[in-house]
Image (cartoon, rainbow, N blue to C red; front, side, top):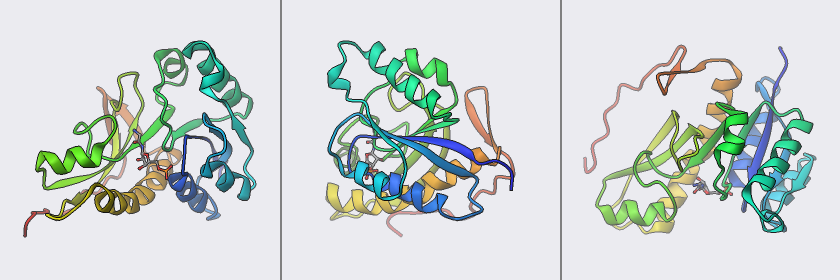
Length: 216
Ligand code: GAR
């Protein structure tokens, strides 16, 4: 098999998406490997997950920097040193600016727990429920400096139930997050993803035939 794509995973908390990427990379034919996990918050569960998997970790605490630029310079330095080729934001709760993004253009992807472009930002599940929308889901997209924007790679859809709470909806969406993040990485590492006119084009893409209607 050809060389594996080197991933740097950036986290700020629990790390369940990191775990899904670790699990995927354990399969010998998965075309990517995690070479570093960077956290901007110390003492988080995600760091234990990385350490348990014998992945090098680094804490770059944003609070110890006077300005975003120097924080991002430190991130850039760590990613470069680890020879990262694709940066995966996995519950990384710091906004990145063009200072970093332009140096890693089309090489940073993010997971967001809604069907973008709906419900950017925080508190997505509550806002989705309160909007009365019948569907929500999750999105993997390339990162641009405008928050939760950028070419969409893959999405999964979940029906919102009448009695859903933010927690019940979040937990059903999380199950799908753990499927689509490894899938997006696999597509990129297999060179099936390109961007044309600001939109993602997938080589050999097969669209589902089903239509979802909620309620049935
Ligand atoms: C995930 O649900 C992810 O989609 C979300 O944070 C959670 C992190 O969970 N990300 C965002 O809201 C980014 N805007 P995890 O630490 O268990 O992967």
